[in-house]
Image (tube, rainbow, N blue to C red; front, side, top):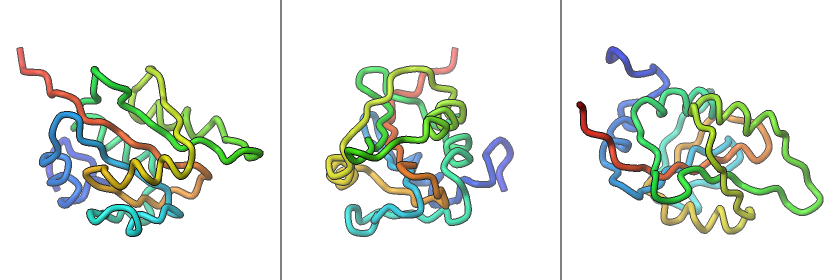
Amino acid sequence: MLKGISPVISPDLLKTLAEMGHGDEIVISDAHFPAHRFNPRVLRADGVDAARLLEGVAPLFELDSYAAPVVMMAPVPGDELDPAVERKYRAALGYGGPIERLERFAFYERSRSAFAVVVSGETAKYGNILLKKGVTPLPR
């Protein structure tokens, strides 16, 4: 255990976040996401819901300020989103900006080029979120 780092952040996830550079993306997926099909770097966080992971990542990870930093999967035509999922994720990140929505197969394709995919224990439908890393501000 490290002081100031959430216990849901595994050593491998902490290392992955540290290795990412500006513009790199990480997917926090729901438990149903076919991560191993789309990305060679898959981390597991079974039993941990996505909002808890986002709460753990938020203090360690600066969101990109030059491009859309948060992307979620759009519903399949005829299906509905649960607005509580987005609210939970926004609250966990402390984020009030725009969220881009990508069609399911476009989201899968984007996950191919992500730095990593973290498979959470999230069971909410369309509970997938992609974060784009920004530049960490210098201490003043």
